[in-house]
Length: 329
Image 1 (cartoon, rainbow, N blue to C red):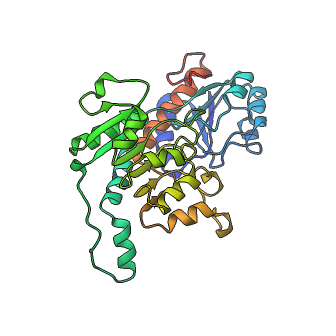
Image 2: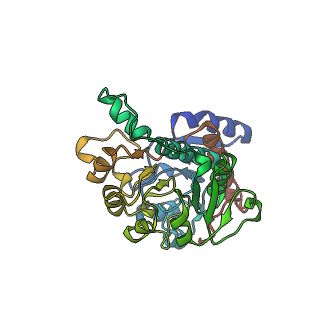
Image 3: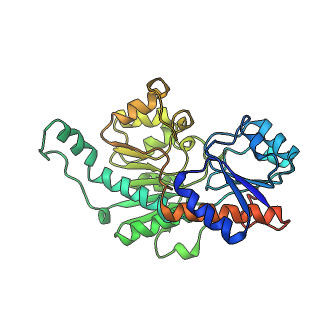
């Protein structure tokens, strides 16, 4: 069996080599993304594994089918870069890694939320100008706050546990009520969550029902003192409406690990002309924290996403049922 892995990061290689030796399966690593030009690299391989935010072009599905490949495995939670209709057309089983390390992303969200609550962006701005006064920057403590979790799956559940451990009241909105989360949160409807939460943290997939879910109308329902945390997908938030809500003080701040247009410049050393205007506006705000879709980037997460993804590739190649097949396929 031969597997090719696209978009391989240097720290992933040791985990790939460990898996390859343990399973006695050849794995080729390439740094390029999977696209119309690089898909030719998959010729002669039995399976593929990739990680990227850029959508796959239609020709990719056709070529993989021609090469005899039976699957598309994304070693990440999100799979919105995959056209499930085209995957089905070309007999490609789609899998992802839905829970490689929920704590990694939950901890990043909590870290950014605490920076916002303690107004550290404002302190940074002042201190850059040699102003070391703290007047007007009084903050509160987490146990005084209500945290609203939108999407209480693996990552949202881990997020609820962290905030609950710090003494915060946690409420959540999710169509599935998980009984094991009862000690950490209370379920409520979406509008009640918006009205009550001091921190609104997003952990839901991007799909037709969640695209631009956070828009002008939603921001008007949130507290003017509340913070928005998005560790999920950029397309869930209408960026122009968020900027307006921040400028008009409808909400107090935001932490964003992802943006709707991030595919233009995230994951690379960008040129000045490639940086979109919305990023420039957000980056200049002391009450906004931005990171380049890096919340997942821990040693535990990389090890798990490599092993879990490759296990599913091998299973499909061997004619077995994968553990993490995307049901929509």
